[in-house]
Length: 174
Image (tube, rainbow, N blue to C red; front, top):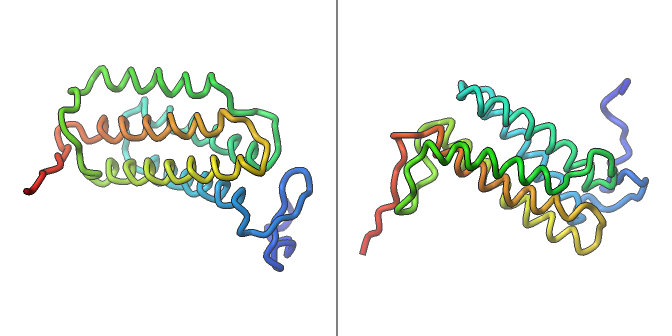
């Protein structure tokens, strides 16, 4: 890229990989934007001190989210597939083996990094909803929504893993 600005979106439209131009308000761009926001938030999390395994996993996830965003835009190289969700499941299982089983709901807290990770989880859920909505009109691998669903589970467990001993439990008030 010789320059970052193209002026092609100044009239309120943006393009997909196949050259199709759509309004920036199209559901596909909400999905792509949410995935981009999630990826940026994972960068914020990685800017903090993390367990080494989490740093390595999050870097791999960020790369796959770039692939996922390009899949949504119509580029099918490096497509997200079921193996990606399987990888997340194995990482979840590994972290959960070091955690106490949950007996009640936890608050999205537990320190700055854990809180950012809970925020990433909720952004991931929004991205998943927008991907499912965009799938009505656009073709991309169905594994994209599955990956985001599993990624939100991963982020929940990662937040717990990071905040071990500092989890805050929901207190029901009658």
